Length: 126
Image 1 (cartoon, rainbow, N blue to C red):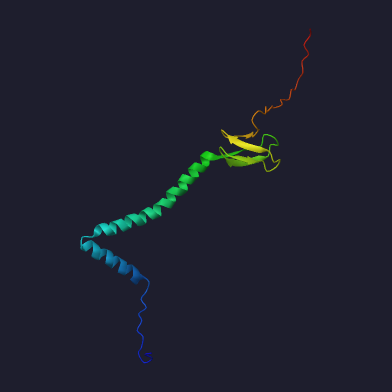
Image 2: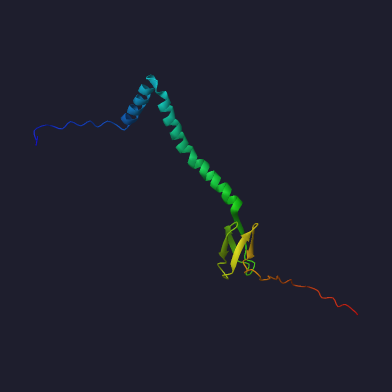
């Protein structure tokens, strides 16, 4: 062990790291290897722009596929994605989202009837 030998350490400010990187880029550019530097800048630019584009693309997709409406059984307000199946949170009815509306999911062969309320009754004479 060398206890008598002093350790030499340099503490440079954080800007020195950037100066070293700029110096390396300048050296590569002067040697004719500028395509490496340009490639790195293009890659960094791509990595910065891609998340921004992805956020806007996801918002556009969500606006096209998110459906808000009422349960056809209990009129509970629901939100779901288009062309999906789920259950109503209020009554538990299985539902499917078709063409922007909630419809009951019935087994094959079942006839689904919607009742209509008649407000006035007329009697027909024979």
